[in-house]
Structures are given as C-alpha cells and as structure tokens.
Amino acid sequence: MNRIGITLSKENFDFSKRELETLMDADEITYSDNLAVFETDDLAGLHDKLSYLSYGKKAFELLAHAEQWDEMLRDVEEADITQFAFPDESYKIDSLRIGQTHQSTDRGLLAGLTNTTGELQVNVENPDALFVHIKGNHHSFGRKIWEQDEPFTNRRNDNLPASHPTGLHPRMARAMVNLVQASDGVTDPFCGTGGILIEAGLMDLQTQGIDHDSRMIERAKTNLDGFGLSSDLVNGDTLDETYAYDTIVTDIPYGKNSTTSQDPTELFGAFLDHLRSQADRAVICYPGKKAYQDLVNVIDDDAQSYDFYVNKSLTRRIAILELT
Image (cartoon, rainbow, N blue to C red; front, side, top):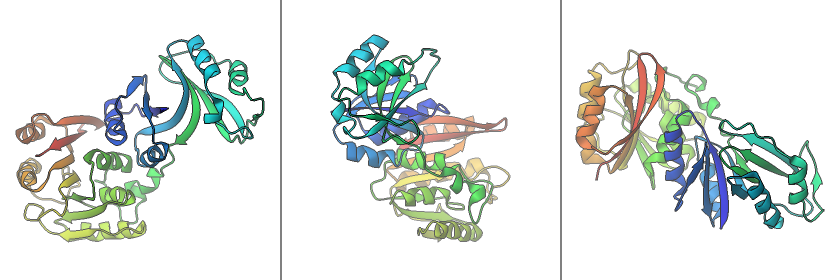
C-alpha cells in the first residue's frame, strides 16, 4: 500500500473534505491541519482522480507521517528510497508549513537520510524529484506527485466567449460535478451560459442543459464550442422537461441578473417537486436563506449543505440531495 498526503483548500474546509472523500473512496482518511492522509494500492487510478479534484492543492507519496520530528526521521531512515526515486534522479528537499507551526526543517539531515544510496544528485533549480517536509500537527515527509494546475481562471465567467454575470466559479462547478458521482452524464436544468456543462464535459461526462431563455442556450452553445464540447441543449421550461440523466447539478436562478420573471422561491419549490420524480441524486446551489432551506428539508431532511459567503446580501449554499 502507498501512503498519500493531499493538502486541501481552506476556503471551506468541510466542503474540500467532502469532495476529496467522494472522489477517493478510501477506507480511512485522517486529517492533520489541512493535510489529508490515506492509503491506496492504485497509484495510476489516484492520478486520474487527482486530475478531477477541484479543491485539492498538492499531493505527496509519503515516506513518513508522525507526531514527532524524531519519529519522522526514524521512518525516513527506514524507508526504501528506491520506491520514491530512481538512483540516477536529481532531487531537492523543500518545506511546507501548514497550520500554526513555527518549526524549522533540518534539510541537511533529511538529505543524508533520503539519499541512502549516495547516487542522487542535488538540483535546486530543476530536480527530477521534489521531497517535502510538511510541518503541522504532524511531521510528514514525501515526494510531491501532483500540484493543482487546472486553468480554472481561463474558464471563469468573465473570460468565456459569451459571458453572463450569474455564472458560478468553475472551481465550484467542478466540485459540484464531483459530488454528484455521475456514472455517465449530468443534467443541468438551469444551464444558463453552460459553466457546469463545461466542467462536466471536460470530465468526459455526457451532458444535458435546459434553459427557458433561448439567448442563454445560444450562449451556452458558444461557450461549449470554445472548449470543443457539445451538449444536448434544450430551450424549454425545466418543469415540463424529462431529464436525460438522473444525476443533477445546477445553480438555480435568483437575484436581479436572473432572466426568470417567476418568484425565485416559488420556482425553487416547484423545481424540487419535479426533481423528486426525475432524479436519484442532485447537487444544487441556491441562496443560503431559511425559505430555501425549508424547501430542501421537505424532500431530504438529511441533506448535507455547505455555505460560501459572497457578499453581505448573498451566501451561496450547496446541498447534496439523495432522492431515492
């Protein structure tokens, strides 16, 4: 088994944990500050999952993970370095502080323990292997195997070919798609300009987008085309449509920039009624207000929700609904 450590975003740590736990499906994940630690025997599969992870930052294959510095040193000394670096690779040792620790790193000592073969060469500019001492509630040491480089900013609403001010940040949209656990495709019943459809499409999922405004459908098509993606786009009333997929990801219309003329709370209630007959699982974004939450509770008392503060008049709430 390989021990893995992944640092997670602290923007909403509970949400970051939920996304990771949904994607990784590990038997047990423990947390030290914002470092998640678990074991896997499928490194190839792990890399595939990391490529989809939205709120992860860096991943490491750990040689050691211990409460005390000397315990970590002992584990590093006993580790088989050939599992983590080839003899002819160059390497560098770095440090990463998480939490409130102010402990220092003895890189010389770690270098001596790590390079037990005496064949690794130090290269601080462009190493083949980057080893990192992660300092927090625990001392961890491992080789970095992944770093978040997904170009979410390029897909931000204001950077799309056909934008609209109501779009979700693509990082949030990607996480919502991860949380719905779709096996083949997702439906977005209020697709707007297609941000959720883009994230799902980039994850090789089939998509269906519905919107009552033909202008939004045209914008969604333009944006999808910009990424070489296609979707089953339907210009119609979502309350009258049959959803192509039983896993639903959506951001319901609300606020002054929404194109709907219907009262947002009434629309949300009618949508949830329709959703119950159409879907097995849904991840939905809506305003974090009591009226909306009361409607969610009607169909799923155990719904897990996570709040993201936007401004003094808006908190976005994301809920995960199990409808079967």
